[in-house]
Length: 567
Image (cartoon, rainbow, N blue to C red; front, side, top):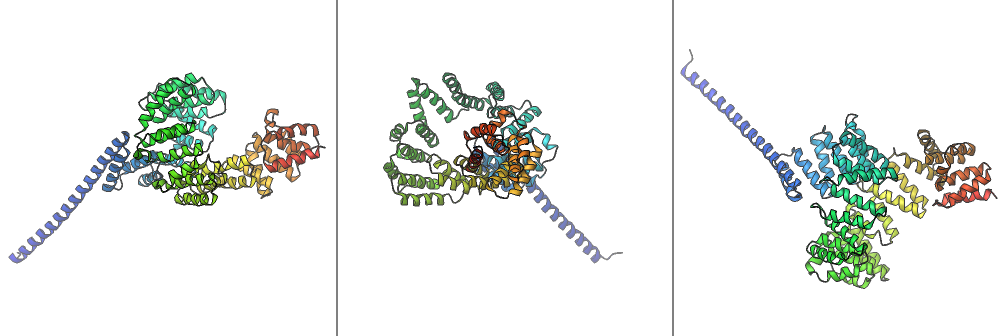
């Protein structure tokens, strides 16, 4: 029988333990309740952010999404919304948010494909390509995969590949009108009459769809301009386009442009209306002045700016458009007066660029160089700002400066592909073979599986006598994979010619049609091989065709040598 003291002690221990357990349970209940509250509230804020986003209010959407993340850092819905907000604002932080979403849900195919699309948007083509290759076979059968692959192919300027992917996406989801739109747009960009007609049919049908009609109509207008369709018909489509509720200020300028081209009596009245509409919106004002600059109305644009208040005329981006107007008129003294002692804020590097132009044109090169150095320094080596500066000077004839900026852009993942493509075109047009070799080496590093790039690099190596053994090996491998490709065949045939086996090279080239061989770039190599084989008359014919094309200096030298051997 327990003593009273022992019973009291056990009772006290039980009460103490019970109280401790109850306290712990209370803590867990409070913690669990708070955790549940944060999760529920975070989801509520994410839904609110989505609602703001659908309404086009990016600022409120971002604020709500950020509050959701503060309450629950694992709220993937909020992360996705922040990624989309950044994408709409063309902000590179979108890539970080897309990557974060994948960290939170590693198995989400939708997030992976969204990341690929985001990478393409910001021109990180190499990373996008690598990521697509990691996706499994099941994912590669999805319409969304082909849509992402189609966008990537477009970024690489490979319209044939883009067509295949968009066609497959439409096949897998025939009711998805946005996929139909993309297919129609790609078909218009392929140099094939039948495919263009198919694209026109698709886009014309989409003009009856409220969500696709604006973009479809714009594409039809631009295609009509490129193919010299009736101005009256195009103006009618432009009139319809600017009447859509979703029409932009640019659409109104497009209609105005057709009125100007047709010398329509409505032009003057419509221009006055648009001037009034643009006067209180800096972005629209800049767009209008830029349009006037592009259409030989810079003096009229400057007169118009004199009617504006100083507050409106100095709000970005209007100052740059006004500076461009003075540049168009060649009024360098007034341009310098306009820009000196001003501050364009984060875009002050552009003010230095325009001032450099004014000083250079005004005959003061030393001061101009100083301003140009300040312009470059002002970009802080940021890809987005370098791109703006590059586009700004693109029409000034500053070739050296443009090339320097493109090489700087080639160091940034998000701009390197586009920059290198631009450099390739520039060096090709100027006949700079070493420059082309440098660019192709970089491009081949970014896209090592691209046979076209491999072939072009092998060809340049053969022409420049640089790493010839490797060039021969690559040329042979590519030809073995696609023997029906005339460009690949000519590179391999040239490699055989350099090795001393001109007969085998000629045998390969003889397998192509007359129309294929009359392409100047192919005719050059065919003529060289014919000359080496002693077929003089036939060689003269193709060497003459080659002379009519745009050849590299090394190719011209080979053609001249072959012509000399025929005498």
